[in-house]
Image 1 (cartoon, rainbow, N blue to C red):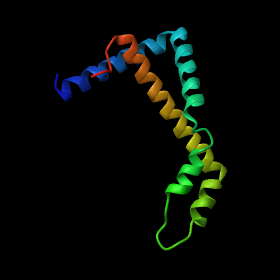
Image 2 (tube, rainbow, N blue to C red; image 1 turned 30 degrees about the vertical axis):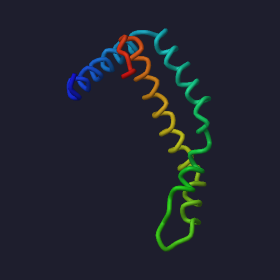
Image 3 (cartoon, rainbow, N blue to C red; image 1 turned 120 degrees about the vertical axis):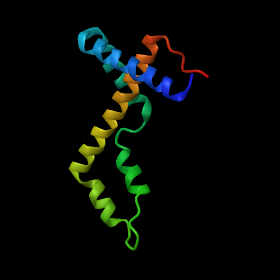
Image 4 (cartoon, rainbow, N blue to C red; image 1 turned 60 degrees about the horizontal axis):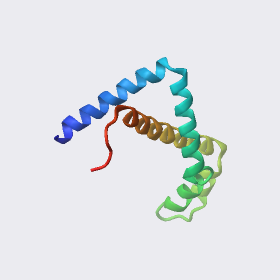
Length: 106
């Protein structure tokens, strides 16, 4: 199977799962449980600020501007939102593939 066919198949599986998710309270609950598991297992909660602070570099300055930005409540909220979206997307993909019976092993 070539890459474009595989990509199309995965997109169809995800679309089908989104429909299932919209119609099934039980499936939404399973997804929330999976997201909670990813949150606990990731070790990222609260660490995204540290990651950004350590990885960002502004040429010609020390790290104080980055540290100040990262310490702001809006940035923390934004990073948590991104983190939750990552967890949601991973959980949706995993669950959709699981339900489709599509093997992820090569």
